[in-house]
Amino acid sequence: MKLRPIQTESLDSVFSSFRAGGTYHLVNACVSFGKTIVASEIMRKSHAEYGAKCLFIAHLKELVEQTVDKFSKVAPELSCGVFMGAKKQDADIVVGTWQTIARNLESIGAVNLIIIDEVHYYSKKYQDIVDYFLALNPRLRVLGVTGTPYNLKEGWIYGEKKIWPEPCFDARIDQMIELGYLSPYRYKMADEMKELDQVKKTAGEFNEAELEGLLTEERHMGTVKHVIETYASDRKSIMIFCVTIEHAEKLASFLGVEAVHSKLHHSQVRSRIDAFKRGETRIIVNVSMLTVGFDAPSVDCLVVARPTLSPALFVQMAGRSLRIAEGKKDALILDLVGNYLRHGLPSNPKIRKPKEKEDAKEKEKNTASVCPECFEIVEDGTICPYCGAELLAKKEIIERDEALKMKEIEREQLKPKVVKFWEKLDHETGNGNKGSLFCINTTTGGRPLFKFCGTGTKKILRERERFEGLKIGDSLEIVATAYGPWIV
Image (cartoon, rainbow, N blue to C red; front, side, top):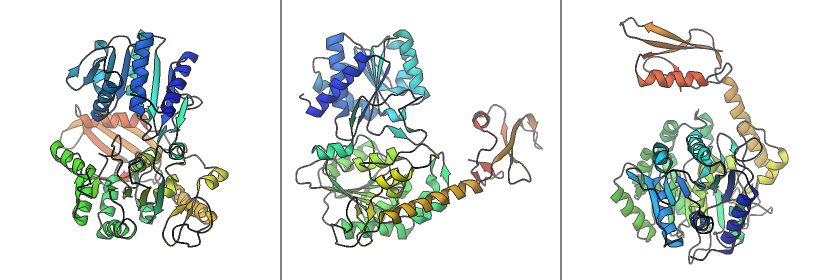
C-alpha cells in the first residue's frame, strides 16, 4: 500500500524520534490522516528492519478490528495476534484492547514497541501496562497517536512535567484542508442555548440527565427540524449528534428518521448504518456510536444537538463530516448548542487547562464573527460572504464569552464547600444495620450531609474511595436522594 507524501513524512519523523532516544513519543494526526495505516506501516517496518515485537493498544473492539484489517493490507505477509475478549493470540505483531491486554500481560512477553491509539484517553490503567513491559525492556519505545491531544482533565496532554513530549509530527485539520486531504467546511451557530447556564456539571461535563430533559422538549426538537429545512435543504447526507439514547430515539421519531445506539441489536445498527452510507437514507441520528473511527465520506452536514465541555469530543464530532468525497464541495456544521462559544472552530479549537484564565490576545486570535442574519461563523471580513449582512464585531463575541465565563465563576462560588468530612466506622442504625456513616460539614452550616453504607456492600467501597479524594474547600454538587441530600 503506497503512503501519501504526508504519511511518509510522519513515518520518517517517528523513526527519527525513536533514534533520538526516550521512551515516550507522540503523533498528532487528525481525522482522515490515515493513523491506522501509518501505525501499521510503523509496525511492519519495525519488525522487518529491526526484528521488533510490536503491541498496538486500542480502547474499542471496533478499532482493533479496523487495525487488523489495515495491517493485513500493509503487510499481507504477516499475521496479527489478537488480544480481545476470549481471543488471546500471541505473535510478533499483537493488536488488542487495553482491557484484555491488562488481564493477560504474561501471555505476551517482552515487546520493543507499543503504539497506543486515541492516546488522549491515556490513564493509570494504560500506564500500568506500559510499566510492566518497560520493566521487561528498558529500551522500549511507546508511541501515542491521536488527532485530539487534549482532554477535559489536563488541557494539552503533552508538555513540561507530563509523560508525553511535544509531538514529533503534527497534521492538524487546517493543514489537511489546505493540502486537499479534508473537505472545507462552513459553520453556523444557529442557537446559543443560554438555558445551559442552569445545567449542572458532573465530572467536568454537562449532566446528561438534565440535558436529556431539556433537549427532548418539543421546542428544541423543533429547532433541529427548522435548521435542517432552512439551511440544509440541499445537503445529501446529514448526521445528528444527541446526548442520550432517549434523546436520540425521541428526536428520530420527531423527525421521522432512524437512530443508532448501543441498545439496538448489532444487525439492526449495521443495517441502518449501511443504508445511510449507500445514500438510501438521508438523515441518521446517533448518540456516541459514530463519533470515533466512523468513516462515511459522503456526510456533508452535521447537526450538533449535543453540548459538550470536552474539546476532544467537539472536534471528533466535527471530524465526521470532513472527509472528502466525489461531488462534495464542503461540509456544513449546524451548532444548535453553543459549542462554538466554548471551543472556537474545530480546525483551531481553544484548549485550556481546567480553570485556566484565557489570555486576551489568544481569545482575540481564536474568535471569529457571527453573522446576525444567517448565523454563519466567518473568520475574516466585516460582511458575511453568504448573505451579505454586516457581521457582529469580534469585540461583541469576546464580551459575550466573558459574560458566560463570569456566570460560570459565580455558579462555582455559590456552591457549598467542604469544611470537614469523616467516616464513622461500626455505625449501627435504628434498624440494627451495621456499617459506615459518611459525613460532611459544608459552608452552608446546619446539619451535616450524611450517607449510611452497610458493611460488605459495593457502596461502602465507592464512598470510601470518593472520600479519599475529598479536600477541605472542595466545591460540592448536592442532589436530593431518597435518604436525604448527598454529593454526586
